[in-house]
Image 1 (cartoon, rainbow, N blue to C red):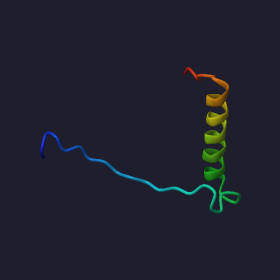
Image 2: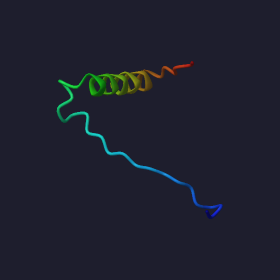
Image 3: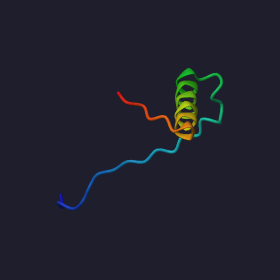
Length: 47
């Protein structure tokens, strides 16, 4: 393998498509919304 080559993968996910009946998608969508609100409020989450 070329030293400059880096393996990568991509994913396209549309949580707005049928997320209501899908609990994992709802959780991810909710966490994204929470992160957006925290960012807007200037809150940084430290773990």
